[in-house]
Image 1: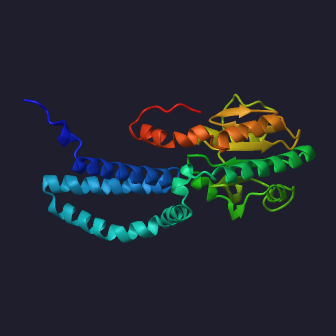
Image 2: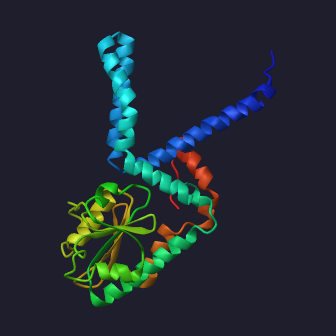
Image 3: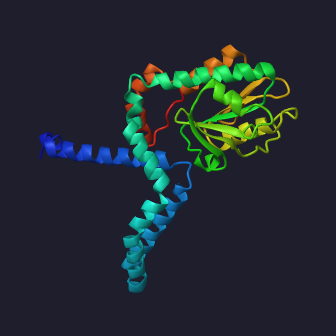
Amino acid sequence: MSFDWSNLFSWQNLVSLLDVLVVWYVIYMLMMLLRGTKAVQLFRGIVVIILIKLASWYIGLETVSWIMDQVINWGIIAIIVIFQPEIRRGLEHLGRGSLFANYNKKENEAEIKLVDALDQAIQYMSKRRIGALITVQMNTGLDDYIETGIPLDADVSGALLINIFIPNTPLHDGAVIIKDNRIAVAAAYLPLSESNLIPKELGTRHRAAVGISEVTDALTIVVSEETGGVTITKNNELIRDLTQQDYRKLLYNELVPTQEEKTNAVARFFTEIFGKRGQKH
């Protein structure tokens, strides 16, 4: 008995495959949107409620099942209220087209502008030994740390970064967090690393930079108040005493996507979906 390959590649099957892929993509984007926020714990609570509902229905616990039905029915309104910041952020991203920004030919302009602004601020503060701590959000969300700071939601510019870290000003103590190429907050608190491998001569800013790199993939820049030296941390790595050429090259490599990365964005997406280990560029 021969297998009819024409049925496998029928129009209905192709549409069904496309349907599944679209659902996977939506789920993936929701996971990226929620990752690193307190909404993850709330989402887990919703999953627990659904599991209790299914278990009570299967076992025959009618009262428990009825209560879970009421929780689920009213839960839609509760979800809208609880997840309001994430829903708003997602709609803003959709309105800006940032969900598909990896395919926009002009996407690098914002990243290049960000690198130039960081360079301007670093050069000024390094020469004058003005201490600074700047964290740039990568893939892992930093919302829990953003909540500890003073909201700014401002365009990134060298002048603004310099003014934030001028000594004895209200915002100079703490970290600036940059998210989506904008200054989200200033004076934010980052977790301090307890690692014994950090040199003793490094202070609180450096420990905070290493600390955030231990729990997220954020890129953090430190300007030493004592020496004016520039340090960058990422993925639990600390790179000290960088020259302007060195840190500009590092920032470009980390923040500005290459043409090859943009071309392979779709392939990397499906690689992540199906659990294969991606290679770091």
